[in-house]
Image 1 (cartoon, rainbow, N blue to C red):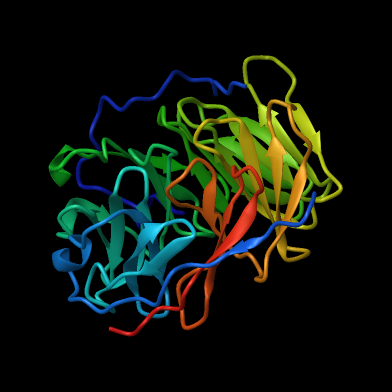
Image 2 (image 1 turned 135 degrees about the vertical axis):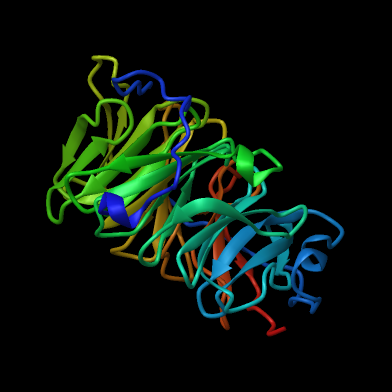
Amino acid sequence: MNVSALTRSAIRAGLLVTGGCLWLSGCSSGHVAPASSNSSSTSTGSAAIAQQGPQAGYMWSASEQTLRPILGVPGSSQFGAPMVTPGLYVAGGASTRSGVALLEDKAGQISLMSAATGQPQPLAGVHVSGAAQFVFSPSGLNAAIFVPGQGGALLLTGLGATDANSVQVQGLTSAAGLQAAAVSDLGQVVAASGTGPSTLTLLTGNAAPVATLGGFGGIAFLPGGNALLAVDSANNAVELMAGNGAAPQIFASKALSAPFAVAASQDGTTAVVANGGDDSVVRLDLTNAANQMRIPCTCKPDRLTPLAGNAVFALTGPGTTTAWAVDAAATVPHTLFIPAMVKQ
């Protein structure tokens, strides 16, 4: 993204960036568990967020242009009423861990919203040019905002603050248009660029190249630090990079088929990879204590969005058909379904 396309009137200093170098540490069939019932109808805004009981997460509904909560627990859940007025925002994302949402309106203004209040607060001077993507750190307290194909990004830290004015924002630049990005709990941002071979670059600190992948298959940080997972789709391998001079750990798997996304469990012991070549995800034990496992789905995965649980991820988005998720940390890993949305 061009720097001019992602600007803030005053970029605040004192961001938590850990130095100039990237500090990176460190198949069988599943069964289907049903959700309990269809979604109920409630009003939009904060009333929709205040529904009683547990929530499994939040997902952006592209068809409605709104955020929806997932009410209940994994395996027994349903989509709740829209969290914001449908059509008011053109893009959005939320962290299940922190309960923080980021929204982009039609003018490119970015707003911050706590799921507890359901009241968006514009971030003064923070605008984008184009449909933004929002990537959260594992804790949900940091986020990166970028527009695919543009050569820049924004790093937001301090998202746990109740006042939007307390959020710190840093503009990041890249020599090439961004394809994807990942942000760590320590405030590091790694971005992928290029088609075919893909270059991974650290955008914080000294903007140093990290690695080159034969094909881009996804990037994600492990919780709590700067350990980075990177998937090479050309070689069907997952790399765990330490960045401290040690060689990356390589996890190759015949179960990988055109992988396109990767995520880590909350305890940092498991990587989950979404396949684009077949209808499945693959669980990889990063401690090498268990065998790799392919988990088939009655769906075509198009994402890995973290939900409540150690390694529970949405595989498809909300819509007029059933949505799907996977619990990769269960004793018997399995897929879960969430009934289709009910129009409000």
